[in-house]
Length: 327
Image 1 (spheres, rainbow, N blue to C red):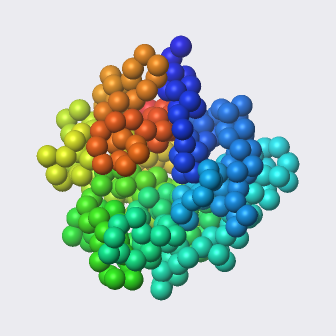
Image 2: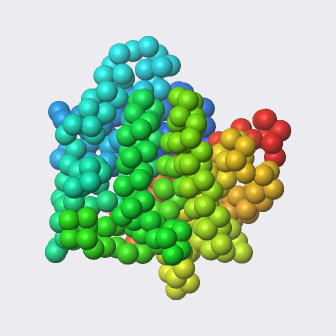
């Protein structure tokens, strides 16, 4: 069994919250495993809450995370014609547009509550740039998706470094976590590119070009922090933080996807290949990636479903580039 199949099998055996269900299914969609991502979309809709949030297990305070399942539900409808999936995607969209709590500027909050004492619930997490804007764009809400990204940029983008901070409290105008988290910037990188691709498909060329510029700026900045083995420190500029493989796989996926979209020269693949070779050394005999930002709190090295998914995404876009003769 090759490493991709081992990683996929192991990923499917892992417990998953809503965003993990979404990113894992999205990875399998990008990898072309229709036999797996459509059943995952089915369960995301089956576990949809009454207010429209997808893939919830029990009660949940998540607002933007469930939207990570949105695209695969819509793609499952496109693939099967079954209105069950379209209904699920539309109910998720309605929640985001009309029910989800927002900041005073109208940007969708990440959670219903604050997990840290002393902060309000009007928080933006950079993770949400991956969860929400790409799905909005897929559902024809390109202008709203771009408006949401602009909100993240105003609050979380650090113009001095051209990186994103992790978490901000918009009501108290302060940061909950004022760190350049490598995985968080990886989420942003993939979210920008996915939204740009969809904007271009729908004819919003100026918006797509602007999003692509944001993507290349962030990628260029992150690559300045890439370690000799292709990975990153968990906090990008903090060489005392642990070395993380998840963010390197997110960057690798974004590089191959950028080459596929003709946004990057083929030579950029060297940086992605280096990361993959290193991360593959930490895959054990059951297909579990180690030396990654670890669940459940993502504050120390461990394992995670999103690490597995990011590796699969990187391999998916690497294979597509090879098939097209781009690398």
